[in-house]
Image (tube, rainbow, N blue to C red; front, side, top):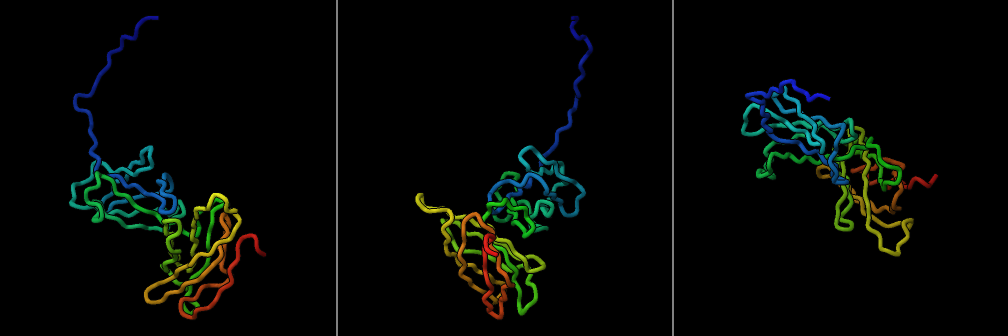
Amino acid sequence: MSAHKAPIYFEDNPRIDDVAFAVVPYDSFSGRVVASGVKATVEGLLDRPIRNLSGHLVFINLDQQAAYSVTIDASEAGYFSPVKATFPSAANPAAARRLVVPLVRGPSYPYAEATTLIRGVVVRSGKAVLGASISIGPASGAQFKTTSDGRGVFALPLSRRREPDESPSKPYLVKLYLNQGDDARTLDVMITEGQSHSFKEPIDLIEANEPKFFDSHEP
């Protein structure tokens, strides 16, 4: 076989892209980067990011600005959206071209079957509450929290470290905190690891009702 003798040409002035910054969207429950179903835009610019192999959304060759206002849309992946952020971040101005953005799972997130969940609806005098904060206190060094959507619906995932000899089916007590503005409720509920639990009635921030609570194995 004869050697290939076709000439090879190289650009005299190859294009060099300048990385402005990369958006790093991550799941606030698992801590993992959300690598699909996420879009990002910069206010006032038409530029679109390039998704790298790590799932980061990389903006290149942007007009020079002191700060960039970024909108992240992760609704396709099941997260509350849109999320607003600014690069450089006031919380971490020294971050090297990385805008780290936590995403909160919405009620429609496709949870795995064995995820421990608390589902419910938050109302105020019978009307759905948007943006109520729902959380349980520190458990095994972590705090789990979410918010309610426009229907007042929420889905709170949580996990718990068991003792080596503890049965995974043994129920345990958690305190559920719900609040918006000056209105707040605290409810004690029994949780079974790996089960989905639901309130049978809406939780009212004003009328202090006692909604029934059950897990997925109950009728």
